Image 1 (cartoon, rainbow, N blue to C red):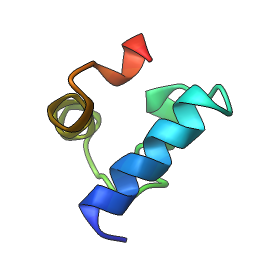
Image 2: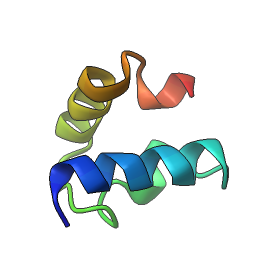
Image 3: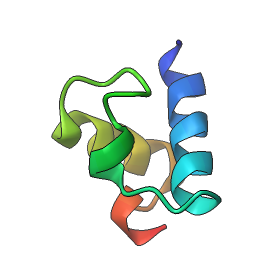
Length: 51
């Protein structure tokens, strides 16, 4: 899964399904929660924990 797709999927899972970032970062292709959070914030302008 491309990172752009992965971040979009992560946004959906967090916003619409109520998952926590720590529950889904591996499922969307990231090996590190910090890198996932950085990439998410870069894409959406907000930390995944704030969605």
